[in-house]
Image (cartoon, rainbow, N blue to C red; front, side, top):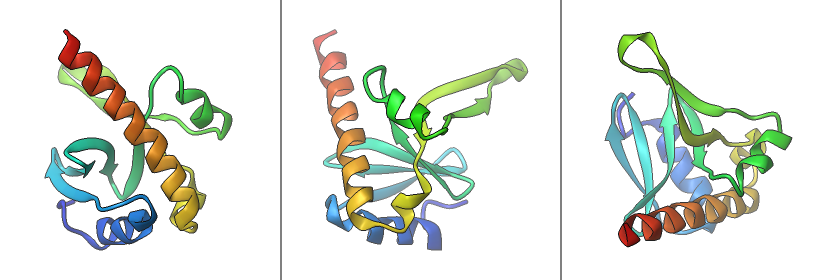
Amino acid sequence: MSGKSAFTDFLKEQMAGFGLVRVKRMFGGAGIYHDGLMFALVADDVLYLKADEDTKSAFESEGLGPFVYEAKGGKKAVMSYWRAPERCLDDIDEMADWCRSSHAVALKAAKAKRKR
């Protein structure tokens, strides 16, 4: 998938209630950025939102899982991005809420990284 696709164009429209987002192609998928921070990714036309220990329970309670890929040597790598609820694709307000939460996680991670 390229960074520019019908699905990512659709996501940009759905995220309009959250704010302006930029889609950048990466590793066969795409990263979604707001204010210079990646807070979501798209792989195989599935949206994943950034989560941390404080927010992953919201995803778990929805029965959603993290983004997993096969790393070197056939090992499974689990990232801190979790599948977005399907209703986000139908509800701009719901999408904005989940995006705000994920962007806050990205901000927190960026601040922690700067402190190190």
